Image 1 (cartoon, rainbow, N blue to C red):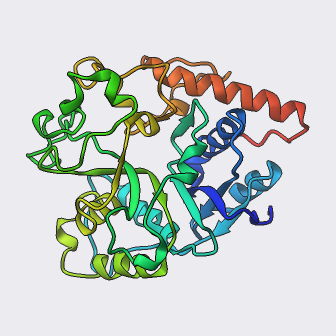
Image 2 (tube, rainbow, N blue to C red):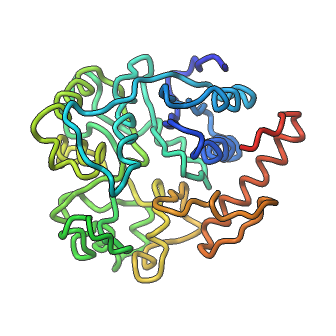
Length: 312
């Protein structure tokens, strides 16, 4: 396994199984393609198998074992099983050996360099989570475009931060809506910019083990939104461009393909689910083809570098 990086600033991504491994490998490839100065560190739990660790090692991707976080009280996520894994995405707050961590989901693709996030002003660890800039993130889209019946009833377009920017799409590329604009002020946990702090991490762990848990419908996202309400820094959508924003009638009024720095392939299917046996794109969502193209480039580069084909 590759040795952990010595950098004091890193990208991290959580991996708990091989279902997302192709996504992680292509995420790493896209970061390098955009010439990021910082490495990607894979945070893996004991549920991640040896074959996955071997795949990371063969590509020189550093990996760090972390505990699998679950609240003390069981929360039923049978409607969205992915949320069981999401608690562990809170781990970067505890990794005090680093000065800055930008946590990324493995179903993301970096289209432009965004190293500036490594220097974004946030509260120093000494403030122990009591300041006004505890972390940075993008807004969640609360429009519920797939009309999932188990989502909160107030997740409607009128309450969405992105809706408030429809009349000024140029500004939306560089400025995020204030979390106080809508009544929800809800963040998306796919990208989190963090100054690790043991004190902040302790606040988080205490919170998820409290009686607040029944209201945490979206796991880590609910924790951070509730615990630090109004005290997080909102980022423009381009840093965590949820693929659904691009869909007609959702937030296509603000979406600009040429401005997006990081696209987030939320929900199913994932781009790697829409390839034929030869790795060619067979889906309908055009944005998925962007990932497939990067994946093909990655596989070609790995072959040229003599990395054994392992199916990922």
